[in-house]
Image (cartoon, rainbow, N blue to C red; front, side, top):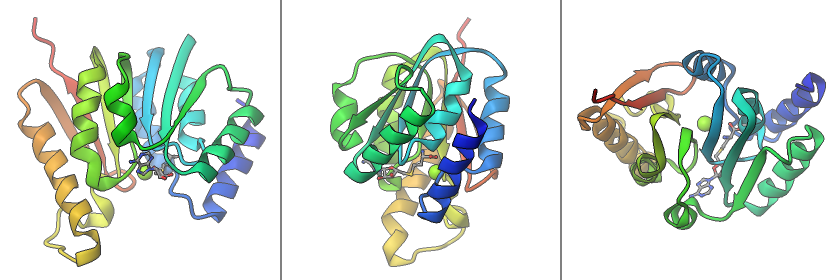
Amino acid sequence: MKDNVLNEIKKRALEEKIPIIMDDTLLTIKKYIDSKKIDKILEIGTAVGYSAICFSEFLSEDGKIDTIEREEERVIEAKENIKKMELEDKINIFEGDAVEILPKMNEKYDMVFIDAAKGKYPFFLKEALRMLNDDGIIFADNILYKGYVMSDYNKHKQRTAVRNLREYIKEVSENPNLETEILEVGDGLAISKLKNND
Ligand code: SAH
Ligand code: MG
């Protein structure tokens, strides 16, 4: 890892108020991945590529990351950052709305990181489950959204987001095929794995 370059990317993202993955969230994901090398990662919400760059550390030698971002300016900056880190062969950005792109995808992934529009989390879950390998793992960031999700918070602006984050938690908790943990790390992290049926 080019640590200085990565630190610059992080610093700039924070200055630009881009909501990049928090350090403790990243550490938790790393712990769950548990040094097992991963072949394919899907990320929904690239921003400037910071988390994708961090996740590249988990990849096997031929491993790849597909990541989706709809804001053109962020895609441009993400591409610059990925180039600076010399990770162009590992990280592939799909530019556009994940709601349109995901249904057209048909790959299988070992890890999915959901970190985009909160109002779309239940949809992202459905698509993530469709493309998840049997021993795969899904992480959903910001699942507790500043504590709003677990309180009786109903402020108008965030109401749709909160309703859909609650819906996501309900679905992963009630799905008999999934084992799920909701952690208070960072802004809340949901971790779901398929139960093995043998
Ligand atoms: N994962 C990044 C941070 C992502 S911030 C990191 O930790 O470094 C969330 C990003 O998701 C924003 O850049 C936003 O533009 C993008 N986004 C939100 N909704 C989206 C959608 N429906 N399709 C594609 N990108 C989306
Ligand atoms: Mg996030």
